[in-house]
Image (cartoon, rainbow over all chains, first blue to last red; front, side, top):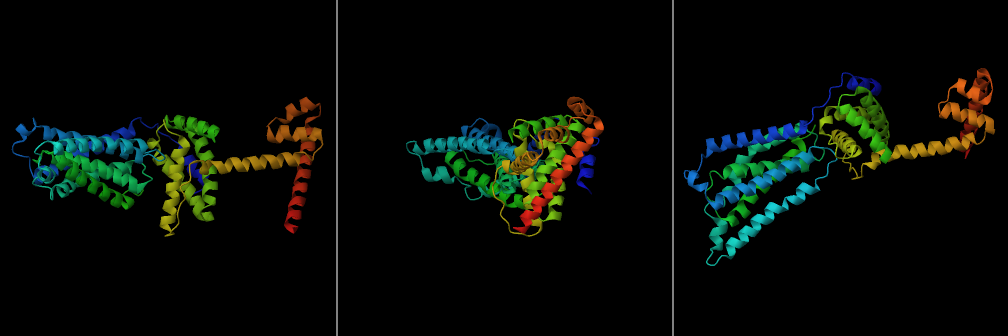
Length: 212
Length: 183
């Protein structure tokens, strides 16, 4: 086909683009990811039995706020990575905020008189926590890839890592309704590791799964 | 480059609202940028394929353009991605430099500047009256009738005069090229 003919074809019967197309994709990504991760967790693990009481605990809200903030900035990274030529600096820099906050909170709890640093960090599920987070996050990662493929990622590794960041944080958010750990140092280390592993996985898979 | 950004952006925003005329102008203008971009990086056939691939990608993904960001950066992001895609398909381990968006748009301006300088140099060889006629009609798009009225010549005389002037320039150019080849 001649290029001039191609242009004629592309520009004939041009439909206006509905505003907010990207926002709808991101929203779909969030809804789908949250639903899929929740389903996997309910089927595989269930909820913690004392969830009602736990909803009033500081530890529960620490986990929810921390993972929610990272998921939010992760979604912003995905949005930027899904638009060609869009700078990623701001969402990546802002990601430091929740990391700093959890590190500060962890430091405060470790500095309490009589604090047992080892148990604050290791809890009782340290070695399984990051891997369960990756498993719970996996369906959310698929949802994030689904969404990114509807956008136009041109930096695939970065876009995949952003999708993994978003999905990992979403998975950790969902996992928080099962996990009974409450200490900030535990969250700072193992939740963060679970999210980082998902991000790494997303970055590796994204390099080919996001091609278009 | 800045003027180009403003013009392209205006076309793009209109195209997103469904203005097919603006969209056609935009795609034609981008085709020129893309051709020179890919011509310097790919074989002839692959370059035109890449131009078309990129036009299709621009069309299919046009909703991802954020009007608060530069349009040229958006296009360049896609063009560069398609270039990497092309290298990957041919299993060529090539590194694509992390050049900035101006790379895609700078070349045209440079070529235009050189062409303009050459045209001016050529025109300088004509007698002043003829030079003005050629400039008016061939470069500035003045109609034969207007030029005739302005100079007091008949329309036929204007046509003949311009035709001869252009022909003599062409002969001069051919002679020049021959001389250069002999060097």
